[in-house]
Length: 442
Image (cartoon, rainbow, N blue to C red; front, side, top):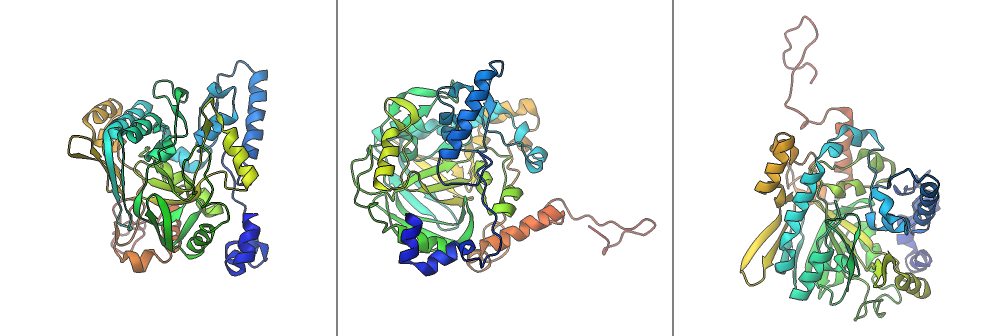
């Protein structure tokens, strides 16, 4: 229905977004859902089918303690195994040569969790948050004591921290002690937190697009500029029938298009995985890196108050009213400064400093990391994107923002070819019997 609506309303934009349907784009690769291994369907049906298959196997093999499954979306994966959700041990990411060659699997789990715990500690006391990024993001939100308390109780998910109250609520929060088990208390969504200001960026889960700015007023999107076809499409769907005048389940006021997600990655060894990017334009894996934020628009609600399973109220409402089942339209930011002001203390605490997760520099985290080796090496980010005008020579608005994918893919090409200039210091070599002067291979 949404595709049909857009095609009738903006056939030119539709043709640009779906070139494969006209045959002009040649053979188009289908994006694959990492949780199922099947073409991405945009719904949870395939995930539920795979979940039932895993349950059947576990029932016939009681000697199996548990399973690792999927590359992200822990909440949905664990829910798909209900009532055997305690058998879910986490995601499985070591299914490609890039991850196997990285340091992701050797990063100590206790260090990972301690850094997350230290970062989340101030949330219960936060009365205001302010967020800036050199790509143009400038946002703020005021928080009541009730908002901060609910937020702090629902913010945790290993490797995917819910750093805005709206995503941390309308659900049962994860337990720190018995992760990935859920806590016993359902956290109400209302009252929602309201964001103000501008979100800016050049890519999301589905790949790169020209720089866009999404403006928020009183929590909801008030306008979109830039973004090429991505921005034009969002501008159209801001007017989609039934989204702005309906009150969604567990909400008090009408409207769908608010800021739902501000999520932090927390693993310093995560990186922009070449394979999904080159095959499908998918940049989702990079969101796991510590300090990378992914921002999601629209509403999602996971649980009803009676159990930590898929919300039947939400699913029935979406089906009946032909409204979105989930949030989307993600933006990634990499160099963000994110700070909270503590209530009754007149003190600001930086949780991110120019993209660096500050808890990685906490003395307790460094002391624990030192048990495994050099803490500087263990806690260093192994991948930082190269962006002209921010951390590389050039003009951001001229050399990067109009076509970020072209620049990023060229960096990736050089990395795969072994010619990326920042791998190691330049080394001049020569053929056997020569003096090795400049002009030899590097």
